[in-house]
Amino acid sequence: MQMAWHDPLTAIYDLMFAAFLAIGAIEVVDVLYRSIPSRYRKESGRGRPSLQRALLIAMVLLGWGAVLLGTFWVYPEQSLAHSSHAWGSRIEIVEWKERLTLMAAMVMTMVAYVLIRYREVDAEQQRLRTAASALGLVVLIATGTASALGVLAYR
Image (cartoon, rainbow, N blue to C red; front, side, top):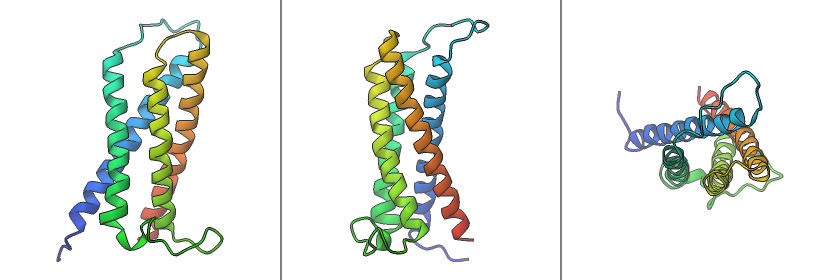
């Protein structure tokens, strides 16, 4: 079996994208879990804010790295800049996956900013963190679904 030059780049892209989704899902589910009041759960503190900050920054870097790698090296013939399809016409699944990856990177950058900037535990900031995390979870689910459909399209 012969390996093309872009196959290792595709594997790196897939790993970056999977790490982006995993770290993002872990962080937003953690924030959403901590926002649910519970009589039976003892609050063990806020954890390590420096670790959460490092994970959020790594998530953003992995997301944007996956977007750039996918757009310009892995799928250059279907990149956002060179796409000839209009929104009303038929769009391939790979292009949807690419667009959702770009939107997910943008939204998760905003989510990471909100989670890093508003770490205090007063009620207004907690509501903002919860809303941002819920939006992030919806975006990650949509992006993961599009990614799964993209994988199935190649089989």
